[in-house]
Length: 208
Image (tube, rainbow, N blue to C red; front, side):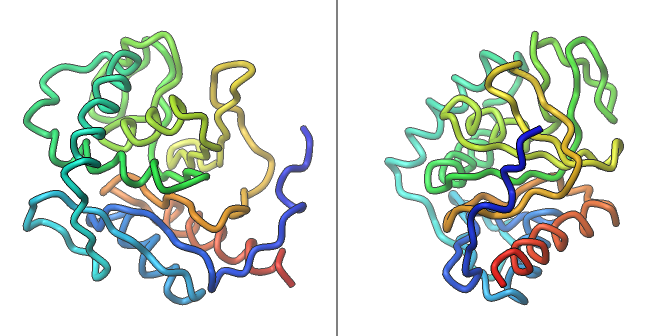
């Protein structure tokens, strides 16, 4: 595999993490990032459940566009009953819209396989479980660089636009853009937390 991680040196103090302020992965991206000087924009839409300290209420235009992008993503995810979660899912679009890279913590589900809660992937493609899957799929639909740390497989993966699947990486990816999305499951585990810190640490070390 081509080494794509050591080419760009980034000053983390000039980087913005676009996230969602939810308990779990979002908060760890936000709080860990602060230790490295990374600023966070944690997007929200008319909810009182936002936990991040850098809350930004998205615009009505971004919300409307988000609804469109969620429905586009669902053509691949093929899930039902999403309308009651639209506030959360549509705000995910802002995370993608303002980012060049997506870093997500979660679980990759292969076609016809079940996720940790027993839901079957009815898509023809690898997807990510839960609400995180919508942000990831929106990122793919809009040709972002997408990385996912699978907590069960304990490894980072990168979406390949050639094979149209997630490819296992042999090392931790680093931030190479000044705007990235740091997102993921609420049910973050210790290896997911370590994966977040590794991204920041290796990015920092690469900049020296």
